[in-house]
Amino acid sequence: MWWQRELARAWQVLCERHHHAAGTIAAVFTTLVPLEGRDRARPASATSGWAYGAIALSPPPDPVAFAESLVHEVWHLVLGAVEDMVELTGPDDERRWYAPWRSDPRPLGALLQGCFANFAITAFWRAERHASPAAERHASPAVERAEAEFAYRRAITFEALTRASGSGGLTGPGEVLVNGLLGRLGEWLHEPVPASAERRAAELRDGHRARWLSANPGFSI
Image (spheres, rainbow, N blue to C red):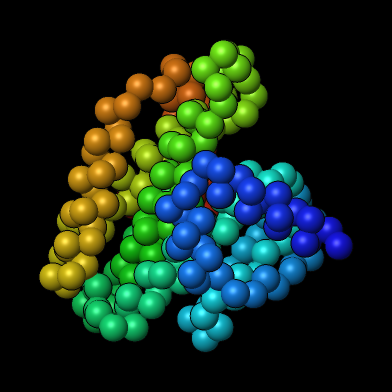
């Protein structure tokens, strides 16, 4: 079966290069719900607090993308479980925020969920950029992909966390979480990446911002 084979390949990626993430996924992930997907380059995925442990996913293009999707969705589940016990944001004050990975304005709680998942994705690509032996890193498409993804994810996650931090809508536990993530990402922002990766990250950020502003007239960033 295709899904069983590809899940096994993604799991191998996680076990070999992402030990912490693999342990968390093994503890949380129980059920894969296949979705129909027309664009293999951009797989769709989702989770729900009403079905803890389940991940809905369309076919990813390769094992690394599959592994990234599992990390993404499991971290949503983890933060959802935390939110069942501790309030991280105050009551919805109807303000909506720019999330650099979404096409729609988001309430603060949803912005924080995205920040947490994107922090995990940033960590994933940070590990991936060092996955190939040093002798194979020059002009390797896999490494170029990982460098650009890391540069992009760390930038947009730091931007969104900074926005959440200054919102005035976080509870005490929410502030602890956001400040901890900002501290770690602040260190990662100083890690050097190739100029080409920085350029690609800037192109992606600028393109998303322009599309978002066009699709959401009346909002400012």
